[in-house]
Image (cartoon, rainbow, N blue to C red; front, side, top):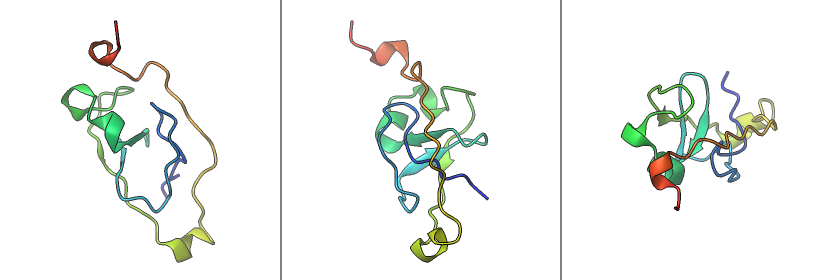
Length: 85
């Protein structure tokens, strides 16, 4: 079962477990759509893996299978090209 992490690892934005615009890689690195647009080639900045839309979990299933509460933040996720000089 997917962890459904509660935040974007790049900007730390809260992400609902039922959101349909969240991206993950095969390691479940979790990103919001806005941050994914800044990643070169749309690849995961942690592992260079392919990012896919994360499946959402139906609200009634969240009662017995809630999303994770563990927040993961990768402070170096932004490519150097997108950082202000």
